[in-house]
Each structure stands twice: as structure tokens, then as C-alpha cells.
Image 1 (tube, rainbow, N blue to C red):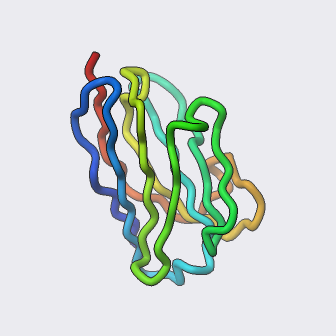
Image 2 (tube, helix red, strand yellow):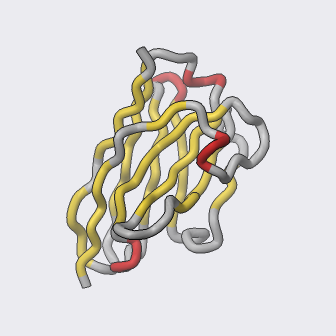
Length: 124
């Protein structure tokens, strides 16, 4: 069955970095664009960025542009979210998701498959 498994979350101090990974199985990973979202406690889900099926195009939310970078390795069915200069307001559960849409899919309903999420906590 389809699975997306995030890893790499944890506790980090403000100003630090984390790299999240999301490994896919059960579908043809290289045919899907991959997005990252997050949801802080009591808040709506927030789009962070998306990478095209071949990694050639990325699109980021203004809130993370310049600090977060998405990359992928299709041979390993894995997408990454490199997060630098982390702030306490980046604290949230982070999710990866897969979409067949070729454009910049920024809305949760545009995604077909979701991971279970990984917690990122940034201390001040």
C-alpha cells in the first residue's frame, strides 16, 4: 500500500538546522511532485514548498523562502526538507505529501497521499 514516512524531526535551538526526510513506497514516486506542509498547535495546515517530479522546479511559501530547501532523490524514493535558521515559530508537525499535479500545488486538497508527520520543536 501507499506509504510516506517522515523522519528527522526533533528538538533544536533557535538558529539551528534540521533536515527532514520522507521516504515513499507503494506508488511511482518519480511521477509525483512532492510537497511539504506543517501544522502548529491550534493553527491551520500551512504550505511550505513543493518540488517537481524531476526536481527541476521548486516553489516555496514566503514564510520559509531562503531558509528552507526541498530536494529529492528519485532513485531512493526520498524527498528532503532542509531547514536552516530555525525560529520558535517553526515549531509544528511537518508533513510530506504527493501530488500528480504538474503546477505549483499549494493547497492540501491538491495532494493525493500524505505521511503521518514528524514533530519539530524549536526552543528559544
